[in-house]
Image 1 (cartoon, rainbow, N blue to C red):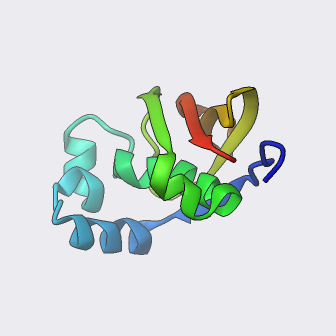
Image 2: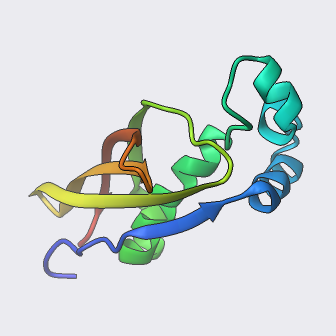
Length: 128
């Protein structure tokens, strides 16, 4: 790669099936992710997607753009801003911020279909 790549947006529906599959894989059966009754009793509007499931969308976008270089040299620094209710359509985006010495840095964010920012931060990876 001679120039930093553009990073394609990644959009996923985080529904009960996907959150349930993630809960099993991560061994995180916390009922606020899985049970609407428990989530509402905890004062939530419904079950919440796991934060790491939301973050994985950023990593997927960066992996699509950088391939193996993302796994070898990528880094993320984010802050969670709001929970992703289940179901939610979530989009991860990355916009080039800077490049220096073959390393590209991006502003990253995930937002739901209403435009609520769920997380934001930076991602960087070596592109040459």
